Image (cartoon, rainbow, N blue to C red; front, side):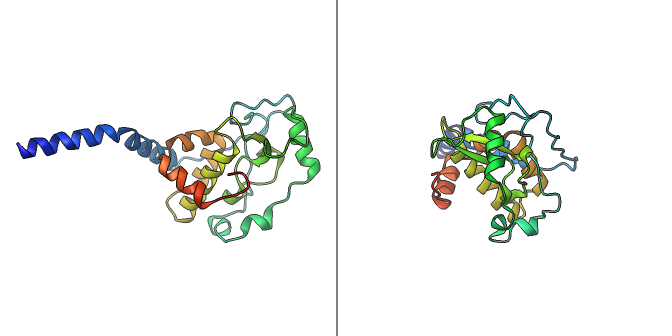
Length: 195
């Protein structure tokens, strides 16, 4: 009888935590590398760009990386300060291509690096887009994904090219696969003006 009760409790536990286990499995699948070459496509258009919900227009902003950035480089504290270089004129061009007035009202948009500098993303226009804060998930939530992936890459748990590819392809898949407690912890750990 006691064994049956324990078995029943275990089944109830598994059922009640099923979404967490599914998320964990989905995240592992997204961040595993099977040895294939991961390609970030070239920029295909320079005007009439349309934000796709929380994602950029993939033809205007497919992502771009510094080809020589290594895991050792990006994991050095302060790395992003040494490579950040986006002029006001480049920001204006990005906003213009997306049909959004520049400068935007404070806190509504940010000229975001699709592949963040912290993951070896470059300052090329192919890697920049005006990302909204609202509706969520917006740039505040993408910051969580960026910080999570940076920690995973620097801890050796995720290959840098996989992190770059997945955040460029669809960062929402990673965000939606994170446990809510992980999201909460990262929002608390990496506070910024955006949080």
